[in-house]
Amino acid sequence: MSTTSSIQTIFRDHLFAGKSALITGGGTGIGLRCARELARLGAKVVLAGRTREKLEQAVAGISEQGGEAHAVVCNIREAEDIESGIAESIRLMGGLDLLVNNAGGQFPSPAEDIPRKGWNAVIDTNLTGTFFTTQEAFRQHMRSHGGAVVNIIADMWQGFPMMAHTGAARAGVDNLTKTLANEWGRHGIRINAVAPGIIETSGLERYDPMVRPFIEEAAKNNQTRRMGTEAEVAAAVTFLLSPAASYITGVTLRVDGGQSIFHPLCPPQGDGKMPVFEDTFDRVQDGSVP
Ligand SMILES: CCCCCCC/C=C/C(=O)SCCNC(=O)CCNC(=O)[C@H](O)C(C)(C)COP(=O)(O)OP(=O)(O)OC[C@H]1O[C@@H](n2cnc3c(N)ncnc32)[C@H](O)[C@@H]1OP(=O)(O)O
Ligand SMILES: NC(=O)C1=CN([C@@H]2O[C@H](COP(=O)(O)OP(=O)(O)OC[C@H]3O[C@@H](n4cnc5c(N)ncnc54)[C@H](OP(=O)(O)O)[C@@H]3O)[C@@H](O)[C@H]2O)C=CC1
Image 1 (cartoon, rainbow, N blue to C red):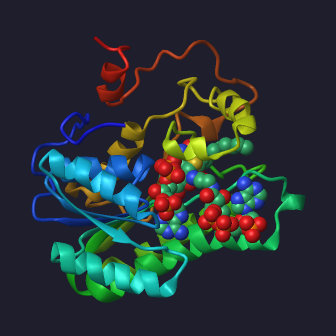
Image 2: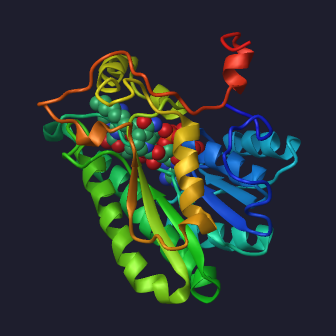
């Protein structure tokens, strides 16, 4: 975890001054790291999620560092929550220029064991929730003011064994990204996606500890031979939201160290020589960085 002032950013100060950003799932992990970076760069941010306590703690952290942040309790599986959550976000920030559809999750399961309720929960969150959040942002603000959207998906390019539900949902969002980019470009809206590989976040801690060794092993199957960092994902999101990406819409940027291009003829080897891009705050705290 990082504080707003300690975050690593390659972007210039005040890049998002005057901009308003809504980050779903902004209370933890990748979403919070994105929110911190956007706030550090001058944006007002709303963090949306289901758990008030997590959101308020995250808001306090950003506020302490001089950023403007607000918490909005919103379950993106509920239509009424989305409608009121977007309205509240616009009221709190005076607009809605940037949307990061980051809220999501799933559970590992062989396909044959996924119960209908679990399938529906994952599809409702990752596909349906993402779509209707974006639609509501369009209806309430972006249709008349333009904007930029980034959808967080996953590395499902070769299918997603043990995660059939989320693989299907995220592939749907990849396609949706292109459809909406085509339909809404005329309104001055750019829509892109980021597909992370395996990222060390609080989200991984929510899985059964029995799964951890599989995750550790899978995380070696990329050219860096390690998990990605929240900072590495947030940098890509920030870029896609920024004016530097003004000629980019409808694309999905893979932030996976090359995991998705794994080839059996040349599998990743060695200890990983590529430098990591991350916040040093935590490692300073735990003594691993002087
Ligand atoms: C094989 C390893 C590959 C590793 C790759 C890792 C790459 C990706 C990593 C991440 O994305 S981590 C970050 C995201 N965070 C999470 O995924 C959090 C953990 N997941 C969840 O919270 C849940 O899975 C959820 C379904 C997404 C949401 O849960 P929620 O509490 O909101 O839903 P419920 O209404 O309680 O549950 C509905 C229904 O879902 C089924 N179910 C939920 N969890 C499990 C489980 N662990 N195992 C089996 N089934 C599950 C179940 O049918 C639930 O209904 P009930 O039985 O509870 O009535
Ligand atoms: N970490 C990784 O390796 C990868 C992560 N991803 C994706 O990146 C995104 C962020 O994950 P990460 O930071 O790792 O994990 P987290 O679990 O920390 O983040 C997920 C966030 O989404 C929120 N959320 C979940 N369901 C809902 C809902 N129905 N309505 C509103 N908010 C919700 C959660 O808050 P709350 O429960 O309080 O609502 C939480 O803040 C997710 O979509 C994840 O699947 C993709 C690929 C890899």
